[in-house]
Length: 151
Image (cartoon, rainbow, N blue to C red; front, side):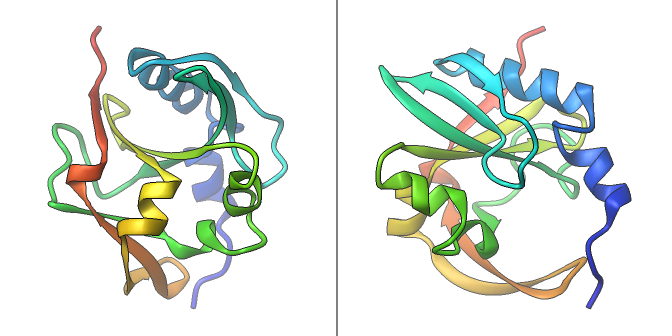
């Protein structure tokens, strides 16, 4: 099992990569999120925003196997570690709605999921990752907002 990769983190996390941060914010704003603010890195949710009049928290992730265009699969896998009972998304859901945005590796496309939908409609499966076989939540693309940046 591979351990934490600082190199991958630096390439893909909005706190380390200004292009990822800028494109993530653009995708969110283009899809109805306002007051989008990047949070200081604390290994919890990456963003706060307003969506449909409510304060929300957002986790962002670059999907390195997705090179652009519409999301190429009928289902989306989200690392189950984001859904641990002690992770920000589930703790905050008691008070604040949470979303997850996955961005293509060219940063031009994204899918946005509501964590309530992930918890309600996903199935659990194990997929290979840098950390070995890792538990994922798999959910139909039908539950996602698909985004393509309008340049």
